[in-house]
Length: 176
Image (cartoon, one colour):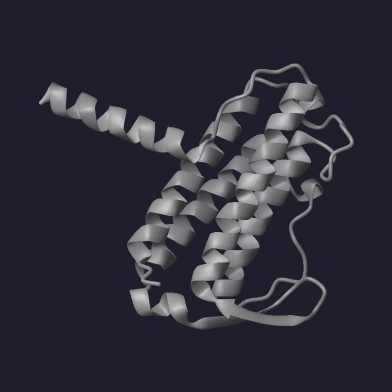
């Protein structure tokens, strides 16, 4: 299988777009709704966003050879705006790191220690794909929580991302 950094840069551009849409979907909700315990694997919308962003952060740390002992806790963030700011920082740092890689780095095993103290190693490409898949799963939970609250939801489908990109490109071409 031939993989490229360009593919993963594109996959993470989708991931960032989808995260932006998910954050946007909850923007108008007040703190009481964001923190309402709805009995999910992460009790509230805020808890789910903290986990999503924390997981993206901890994997980036692992790729830098650092093994934080725990994910961030919701209590470490004051509100969704702070979570969003952390997401933006993780995005920036990940983009910079991805740009430093070469295609051949994708096949290398990257060793890390998980949160239970066990060591694992997988090819970097598998870890990169895992993180996007993990975030997609939790964005699906955000949609479920929004529905439970009776709030509007947004689609974060992969092909919708390309539909929007293609429309932007067509609009840019017409405007030239």
